[in-house]
Length: 130
Image 1 (cartoon, rainbow, N blue to C red):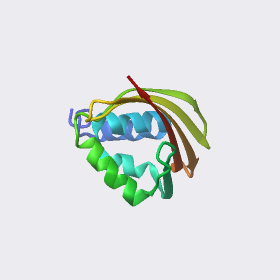
Image 2: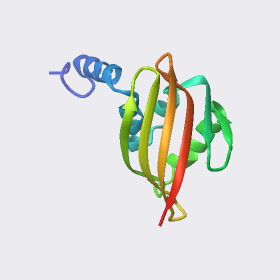
Image 3: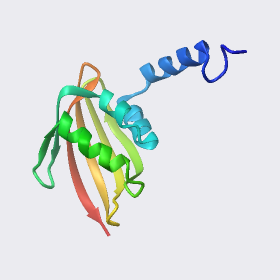
Image 4: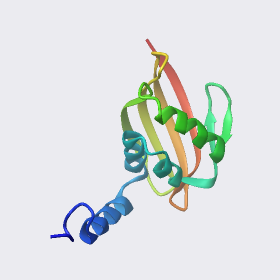
């Protein structure tokens, strides 16, 4: 029936309910897997700041989303695996293995502070792998 197909009302209700019950870690992984920059941006608080400890660089939401668009559009940028170390309503700690277009790989520890169900601050520490 039309209500049960991929465009039907029941399908949409089910999709919305699943998204509301997904953890932030699951939501981030879904946006990365789908290379969905718009969905990724929706997870970020307007005042969010991204900090790379490796370089000391800090980025606001607009700058970060511009970088994410470039990363997600490149098929050689790959999140090989991601593990949620800890998550609650205030913080997410994750450990990821990333591959980059230049052939390098890193183990990345990420800590996201959450506010109002969105990421307000995200800090990463990366270790280059051989």
